[in-house]
Length: 196
Image 1 (spheres, helix red, strand yellow):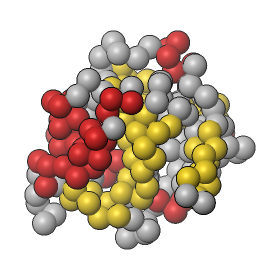
Image 2 (cartoon, rainbow, N blue to C red):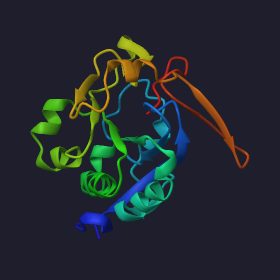
Image 3 (cartoon, rainbow, N blue to C red):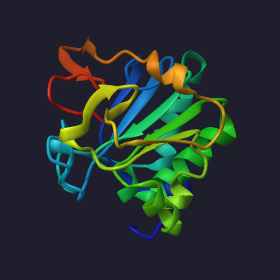
Image 4 (tube, rainbow, N blue to C red):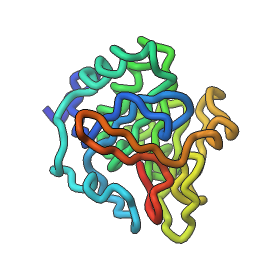
């Protein structure tokens, strides 16, 4: 199953939030991938680091169907983690499906640098349909926690002109939601930590 591509590509998902205002411009569907080997000090999501941690095993096609079912009420989708680019086949297939079947914008938050993405064909394919990639390791020492950047060294890689600096500056720093008795805190503004 590990070699599957396209909509059947397997994807370990830590969590999904169908409506968020703190993970990119407008109302967004947010997906946190499970697994990250980068180990950035101070990361807000250490529970997403283990590849075998608490996750839902799904496919790129199933996640795309979930997103597309509510697309009329969304501006876009944000992929974060964990590290989404450690599952590049699923991310590539998901982004291609969402772009082909909707007008949704796609943002990918990653700890990989732009150079690391461009030099790896699988990672480059994963972001081919993204409008914006926010790239680079989180640095606790350079924490800014706004504009979707946890730290100032993280690069905005505008792959289309869909989003600009003003759009990112307007994103709320923190969001708290309660759904079905579950409290979710998301955004870049958690004290001393990076979300996503």
